[in-house]
Image (cartoon, rainbow, N blue to C red; front, side, top):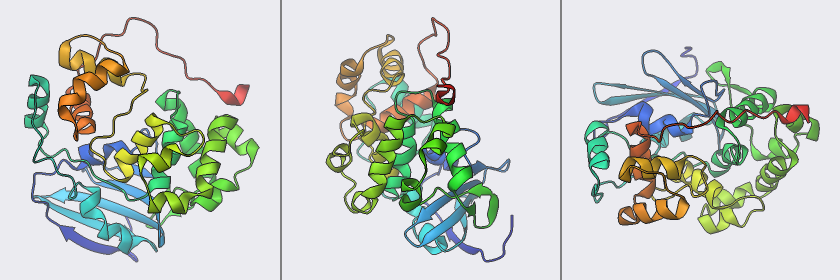
Length: 297
């Protein structure tokens, strides 16, 4: 880690912070070029901020968050550390109504819903993950960031997600090499053209007005960008089965999941995060789905 040009700030949250648990939704696979976890628990994130590219390193020691940032976006990233780590989250009114939820609250008291404040940056990987395996989407994300993202300030081995104007200019053959078919690439480029408006109004209505963006993609985006603790990823391949299995011991569909989560209105995404951390999932009864490779088509 280089300290040249670094800016440092400390922040003490009023709760016992689960640093990695809070930040893990922003990681797109183990090889995400924009996200890195060190052996000592420090977390690195690269982002293209309103002020330009920046890199943020976070480490929690003795209840104090040590934040170090580099690049033109350093001050913007440092200013946003409390919100990124859940300072704007409001879990106080949350009441657990199932034993497994109550147990996970006890085990993970520092799990908060943070927000990056970067809507388009959260939307792009969400679109990539539409109706495909995570590994397939993460491969494309990694390829495009390494190909078109600039080296992260202070961490040149990482890559900063490109700004909207770069995504618009990516040629069709590069999308193909990344493994993304035309439908998802068109959705991303269309969103890039209205990215400024998305940052100004990141509502579900605005997101779902974009061609190719439905309820699942809007929820995945809002969970990360604005910290929407109630956004449910309806349409997810695994989520309804996991929620049903954890809460009532059997798999359910989307309608059944929403019925089970209804008592948690306002905190439904929080509940799914807690249930995911419990490890309770229905047993697999068939072979894993293969990772498709559109580059061979």
